[in-house]
Image (cartoon, rainbow, N blue to C red; front, side):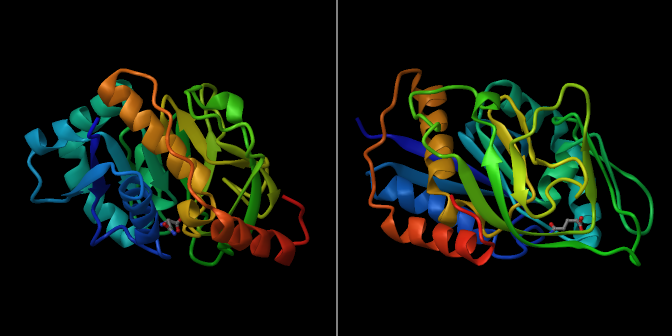
Length: 260
Ligand code: GLN
């Protein structure tokens, strides 16, 4: 069967800090290496609502407060459609600034509160420009039971590594489930030990890194999920040689003195 996926990339010009484009490249390459065709739909101010309906997998990267404000003005016009994609089990990865916008609201370092799409039951607040940003390499343990089980089994992965750089602090609401628990680093707020958030098949995370090159199992989870939702059948991806990716992950873990 010739599988095809359309990957939606939220505001690539405005939301692509700290190498987040690498996450897109990983998704595309890991599909290509398995003969899965991909098309990328860049979502921005010029995108029409009807262009969003064909999206099988959604990605949004980080941004600074100023860009987030610009993005949100446009994103709220696409609110119902994007919410519907997530409600219809379309898998998504939102990194750093993106999950702040997918939550209930984000209060930037300066200026007015930005209302989010309300996909995740989270709020995010920046304590102000004089407060330290939360920066550095991270090791965290995925909370696999919070991810909807699929054929692709995430259980062999216990840890993920990445890099975070955010001023905003995110707090989980009562119904929110964390994506991971911090082993080294700050995570959502530097206090409660949670990292990221999961709702249905959407993952929010503060880990740039970029996240997917060093944690390809997450990419495969997203791809499998996208194919299973689109083709309504069990999908088993062909395994790839991830030796280099594993070495990259180990290098970060070693630097932090953590066993993964
Ligand atoms: N503007 C957000 C913050 O500083 C997100 C930053 C980012 O995406 N790296 O909290």
